[in-house]
Amino acid sequence: MHDLQHSPAAERNRQPILEVLQQLLPTQGAALEIASGTGQHVAWFAAGLPAWRWQPSDAQGDDFDSIAEWCAQAGVANVAPPVLIDVMGSRWPFVGAEFSGCFDAIYCANMLHISPWTTCAALMHGAARYLAANGVLITYGPYLERDVPTSLGNVDFDASLREANVQWGLRALDDVKQQAALAGLNLSARIQMPANNLLLVFQRAKVVNTLLA
Image (cartoon, rainbow, N blue to C red; front, side, top):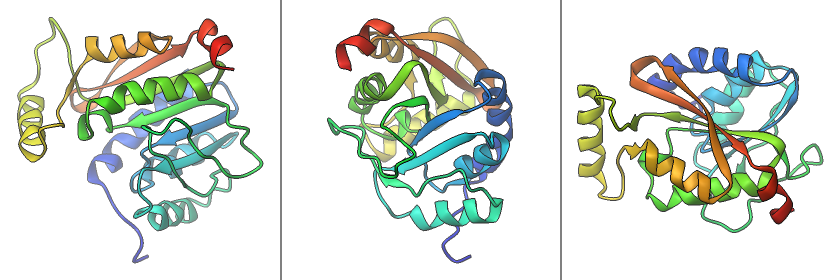
């Protein structure tokens, strides 16, 4: 129990996100989570999507014990041990025979605004390398949108992030879409979520799959 890390935000948003995933995703598949953090999301999603196999990951291993503990408490057997993945790397390492390095879904929550902007392009190009032909990249978090008023909460959140680190901050959706397009990913769905967050779905273009195979 001493290894269990807890995020109040993850506690609040895990069920709304799961409900969307249950509508978006097919009955079964293989999913990679980038920036798993405490492990609350992957444990919850694995329980709610039991026919999916999940590979959690993070850039640092500090919370790997927490991920394992959340999965143990959820009683799920469809989650592989977490692996170290730095999205800036040219290759993302995977372990376990159950994953061939090709995923039906890649999920990343609340990373783009708490990391340098360069991680956005890295995430998009990495997803293009490791998604199956009809796979999807799903991102979740707050974004800045042209012609959509930014909530006061997100304005304050953006300011606090930039004060903490000049390389952090809420990203403009148009800029994220541009980086995705450069990697051959097209925005196929924009879903409004609670607390002024968005869930974005990017579809991997077949031409990119051919070039990067």
